[in-house]
Length: 399
Ligand SMILES: Nc1ncnc2c1ncn2[C@@H]1O[C@H](COP(=O)(O)OP(=O)(O)O)[C@@H](O)[C@H]1O
Ligand SMILES: O=C(OP(=O)(O)O)[C@H](O)COP(=O)(O)O
Image 1 (cartoon, helix red, strand yellow):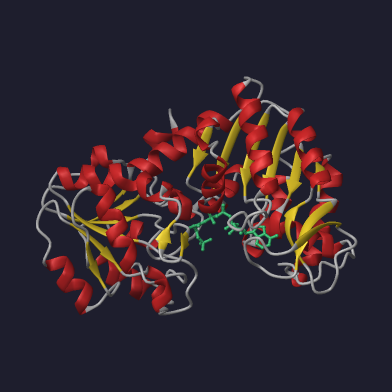
Image 2 (cartoon, rainbow, N blue to C red):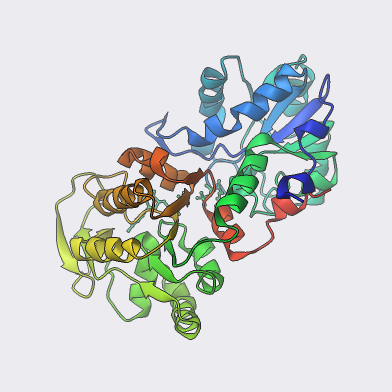
């Protein structure tokens, strides 16, 4: 039995005339008010179109960033227009997630219309999967469709709770992601090399403990690497680093040793004193970072070593950039490794899977996303899936 048939999908849903709550991941990279990578928006258009074309009233639910309560800087209002322009039809916006304003906006919908509600995380009950908040959301719809694979590792009201309150279905993006990842990685050819970088250190560090048992080589980069370097007693200056998690980092290194997983950490870095594009910078060995400096990218020796290890791998899985790739020249390592992975994939010797909102943006920036075997919208969710963990948002959709 294929994984897809374990879930109810849009094929099973009678959406005509119904209010359909559709959880999507619109947590897209934005710079100066502009969406810099629209992969996640494009990914959910088929589901929105299909429901609207079948006469459903689409009510989109999404989070944006990590607000702790209401935060105007993280409103989804500008994203409604971004979805509308790609969808080719209007997307109304309600400046509320629940309550009278949201209810009135839903009541105004005609068959085939699309509405986006305000950031679900503006209500702190969302992340607690609070039953009253779930009930308030459920009151806005007749059916629930989850199309947010990239948020399926979160057991939140809009990603998990709702599936128990309303008839629940997997959207097309959700369905495709589960099928594609299973097809690419169910029996991966070894050696498997994983690259984990980026900035979400606390939410991704813990899962590395399980990942080392699944992969042959683990390359740790980006902000994630700094916590390991600090745990090894190095001074990482003002670098992004979770000093509280140094113990966890050491446990992961021990576990890797015990299971025979090779760990690759940066040996050198591009360091700067300012977090901005073209900031004056230098190459430094990782044990020579000055107190006022930040590690903003991997250095040339690290890049050469990572690419050499990549050449020995048959499968690469990648989440999280090597550096602050939005700020050149701190995109150097990410671009170099991405291009090498694309070339090895083209040559037929490597199966390459990458995922994550910023990782996809980085691969697009490097111009190689289309040359990877598969690119997922998901980062943390993809890594947890890879660990073999049940994803709450996916489990809740099982028949
Ligand atoms: N050394 C570093 N210092 C600060 N930020 C970094 C560093 N390396 C990577 N980043 C940042 O990590 C972010 C992406 O991390 P993350 O959200 O974990 O990835 P994804 O969205 O692909 O899952 C990028 O915005 C990038 O600028
Ligand atoms: O961007 C996301 O994940 P990712 O950074 O792992 O790709 C998802 O929208 C989940 O966001 P969260 O990590 O704030 O729960």
